[in-house]
Amino acid sequence: MRTDYFKKIMLTFIAALLLLPMFAQPEHVYMIGGPTNKNYPNWLVEHKVELTKDASNPFLFHFKGHLAYNWRGDEAGNIKFLTQNDWANGYHPNYSENQLLTGTTDIRQGGDDTKWFIPADRTGDGYYDFTLNTQDMTLTVNEFRHDLNPEKIYVVGGAVPCGWNNNAPELMTRPNPEVAVYTWTGVITSGDFKFLHPLSIGNWDFGYCATTANEPLNYGTAQNLVFEVRESSTPFDDFKFSSTQTAECTITVDLVNMTMTVTKNGELYAQDIWITGTAIPGGKAKLVSDNVDPMINYHYYGELLAGEYKFATTETPDATTKYYVPASASDAISDLTVVETSDANAVGWTVSIPDDLYKVKFNTLTKKYKGWIFGVEKIYIVGGATAIGWDAGNAIELTRGTGDEINVFTFDGQLRENADGSERNKFKFLLQKDWGPYSFHAPVQDQSITGAQYFTDHKNDDYKWTVDADKQGRYVIKLDALNETIEATYFPDSSTGFDALNQAAKVFAANGKVFVQCESASVSTIEIFSMDGRRVAAQQFKASTEICLPNGFYTVKIRSNHSNPVTTKISILK
Image 1 (cartoon, one colour):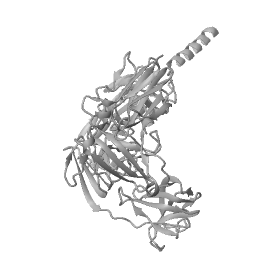
Image 2 (cartoon, one colour):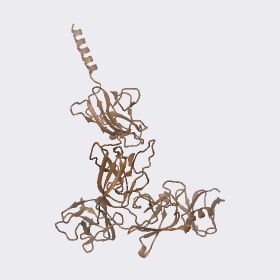
Image 3 (cartoon, rainbow, N blue to C red):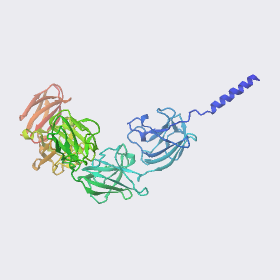
Image 4 (spheres, rainbow, N blue to C red):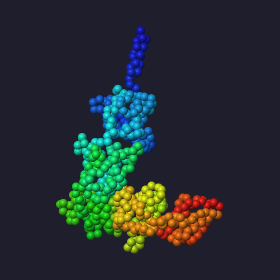
């Protein structure tokens, strides 16, 4: 009897163990997968998105938000659920194959790594409301909609304060939840812009765009929009609207009729702002409006003494004076956001390195400050319209002036639409033979070099100039690096100069020598470079030139007085 009694106890204990759940009830549930992935290609646990735990039922976890097939990453449309900060004990569809994220599916914890998926044809991109039930072990999609008329959309671009920042674009409001009309009021400057769907926060995949390239703003008139999805079956032109003025405006986007209207609320006027302090010769100076966006951009070019300074809204301090200062003590050479204060004793910028020529800039819209000692030694041109294309390492150096024109740099050469490559008729300027950190750009995208007057170094946009199709040939371009002006002169009778040199020059190798022949009197020098970029030979050109070289592969560059260099590759074998 005693033995039977213990057997019953043990059997009861074992039965209780078998009835216990294999996994404990989770406190948290996280979604992870291609649609949430910010790392390419592999998923990272830190990119998981937590579901909201139901306030009254601890077994229910909710998600409401936008999901889309993420074409960049691994398993681009697949998702599953985690319960902790690792891959163990996650929730999966309780099936042998992946399941479409729709309706109600049974789930299990652990086991095979099956997943839910959003289709690659983008039919599943949109707004989802679903619930994961850890008691009934189900995942239920309560609502799905493509959501072409979302609760909110955004405006983004170089013409609005946020710039091209898809992580923090300008939010547009929807005054009437029943009508898909959105508005935004603020200052529009020179530059371009478009609109983003909520799925495009952090990417550029879903946009409401212009229907033509660089479409000019037509104030007060409705302009057509098109919704575009990157990597889909429909075109993705990504055209933008282009602004050349600075004004306070209201943008209205009507997604029912797919139009966009910009209305001017009022013109902006130049502000009076002074730079004051012991670092300023004479104690104070009035800031000057910039060439680009002069209503919001101001500068001081001149000497800074050892001392300090700040910006003030009145020439003489009084009860109405506002001051612009760094949020904390800062050197004059810095790039930061300023704060506004009424405190006349607020600490400004400190000049630790006095110099005869500083450039100090202040944007009253974005409250951005930038200060540095001016000194441009070299400027280079690069782009599809140049002979070297988009090759920063071989960018063409401009000629620096002397005397009163020490800050003026000149390009004299051919600009034309090249037969291949990207952005074939565009170019910009670099201050080093690399893409960063410094470069000069057009004030708006795709500005024709013909008639261009100004360039900018303070935009956060990679704007470029273009060469008109009917104005290809020799250009003389002068950049004043201090005053940020540009002047281009086109010579109509020189449009075939590059072709003529390219056809006239003959380069060949034989018997351990490079032979160069050319009848063009404009050819001035020949340079030869090894494959690692070292210049191994250079000499003045004669009608027929021979240069001895060891075995190897080389690039021969022929320079002309009136066109860009012609390059060719040769091999030397003895």
